[in-house]
Length: 62
Image 1: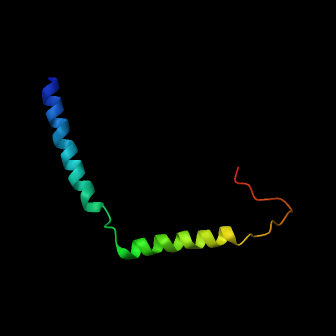
Image 2 (image 1 turned 90 degrees about the horizontal axis):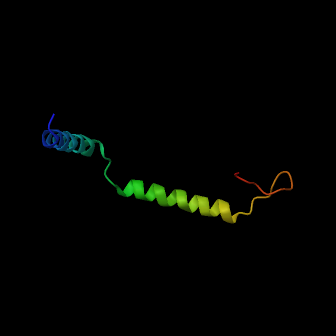
Image 3 (image 1 turned 90 degrees about the vertical axis):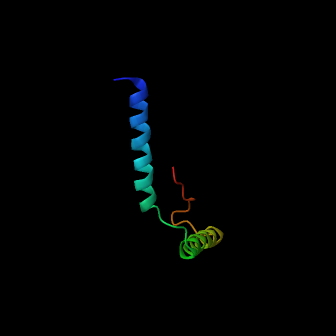
């Protein structure tokens, strides 16, 4: 198979896949933004609350 034919077929298929993916993309809505900022606010409140450790040690993630 010639490389230029392969490249043309690949470009056509890539364009089809991009079009299909565009249909499933969620629009950025105000509700989505508000929920995201609410989650950030809750996280900051939890970080500032200074929760006391249960075993006398600080919580470690790793």
